[in-house]
Length: 155
Image 1 (cartoon, one colour):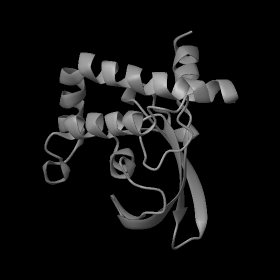
Image 2 (cartoon, rainbow, N blue to C red):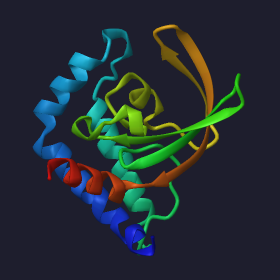
Image 3 (cartoon, rainbow, N blue to C red):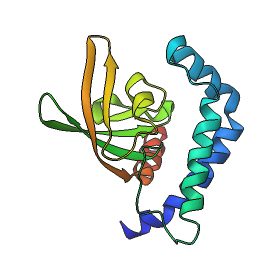
């Protein structure tokens, strides 16, 4: 696990390159998957700024060990307030999603609503049947699992 923590900075630097290289395709996916009233102007610019801030905050650290916000490549544990039950979601790219395993795209309705949320935030997640109240209980880096999972899918 210690080795995987060393990948955190590199993972997010590569993520910035991936977004830059695929911005047109990602923007089209975002626009087609996000209802007009929920779209954020400059969504990807905001995301890039958040990642740059994460890297800047950890500039002097060898690794990023604390994730105060939900990013692509993190596992977020949410507590369903009404049911007092937790569930884990791994926030990933659309091509890596596997909802049965808890891997949800950052462009999916739930993934999009969790992105940028802070540890401890209470969030009202809109779903087709209404709204769910959740609390962000834990955020951790799992980018190495996403990379491994996507490679094993291709094999």
